[in-house]
Length: 31
Image 1 (cartoon, rainbow, N blue to C red):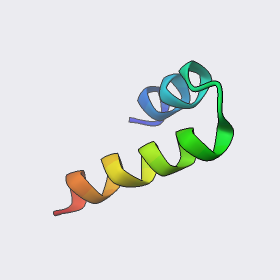
Image 2: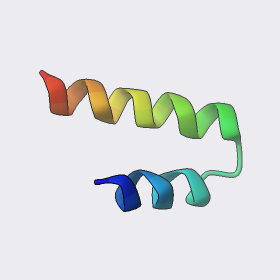
Image 3: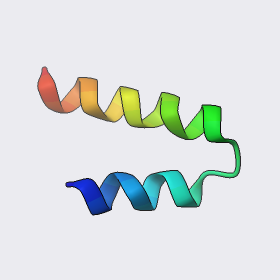
Image 4: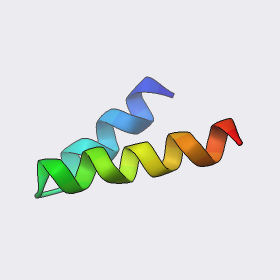
């Protein structure tokens, strides 16, 4: 899971965008 999020962050040009996307992904997983 950690590597998955790391890839998401690296693929995002905007750091704020990547954090927001990761937040959304985590929220969906925890639902």
